[in-house]
Length: 187
Image 1 (tube, rainbow, N blue to C red):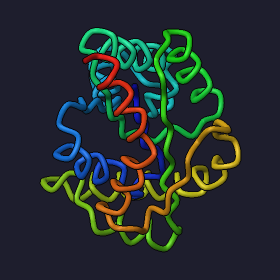
Image 2: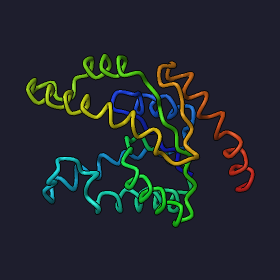
Image 3: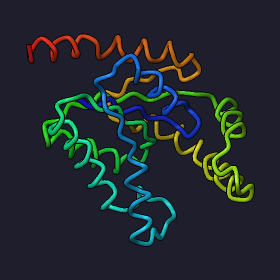
């Protein structure tokens, strides 16, 4: 089972996954950005966004499905994925691989997102790069908000302005019955 935590940059995806980790110790954490960083070292990314690379999308789906298949453990995925075609491609590949996906989207107001992004340090040793990353994240707030209407119909929208603990409680409550079934099924 994959629990995909989606939302705009600054919505709290990684923070939520960090909150889930100690409460769900058997879950693996897989950040698809790492695949993007590897690809950037190998090939040019003409648009600057590795999600535009078809190979990134294929590798993200293959590695996620492989982690579930190989280790028989749930996988937590904190990743912004709002391009409808890309979401369909990745979630479709996971479905074709027989991997269950529970897709959550953290809804956060633009004001709060901007505040959170301004409060983060992405590259502390390079203030110029830090500011470029902030602007890049802010430029994606509107596309993320617009994309909420195009996400898969089974997407669960959560109030990303709740505390990480409250959000983790909601996620665990929604997948809890499935966890119980999978534990009972293996015993």
